[in-house]
Length: 286
Image (spheres, rainbow, N blue to C red):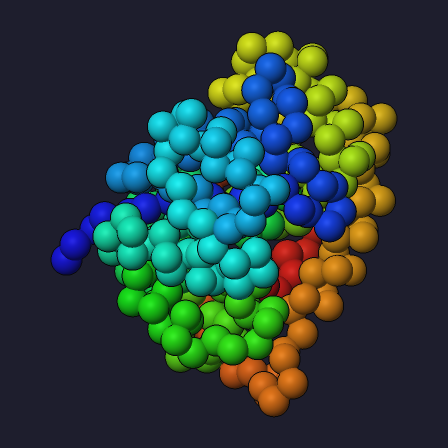
């Protein structure tokens, strides 16, 4: 079986909550440069490509990617699924990794472990779940991407790429979760959706210096644990994000309100954890 895994980073400047975020300076580099460099460090990835928007004012995204030696595919802004399909075709992908450009501190080691479980178990879809926001990656086969592209018609499914899969009861899903039962995504935000997120990330970059560019999830969590005031800066942003996410995940009109549950295999790992985390019930996998 062919195993060419292509990491596709979706990136745009016209973000509704924090315009221009992917090119904001962070620790001496644009945010997108951090994302690209961390994706290049993921084991098992044969190619990294940026899926940008086909609009004149989005040219700086393409320019940066090309300066860093990364291929660029450009397509519709809101039909992100089409951009993924175009990029997968251009790169002759057998499998696709989805990464968003608002994850500048994504831990390559965690994603490398996800790649190993994906190839070992061969689910339809695999992802990291319940890690701090910003540790987000998904893997799925090219065949599944082709099916999604041909089948998904709801605007939300086209924009959010893999929502369609979560409503398909006949699909096998794998999630790589922390060993702890705690919902780490409720405690830590290491993503870039809001201005407060940017404040946290720039502060971490300032505190950590050159090590910021290669720091692990565990190291970032330890920094936040040591500074509750810093952790608190973007907690309201997390509440707002979760409210938006619940709306996004509603089944589109015409779909069953309660789709049959997908077959989900939960794999737990202690990788990425700085130390024991207080226990709390793990809610249902998304």
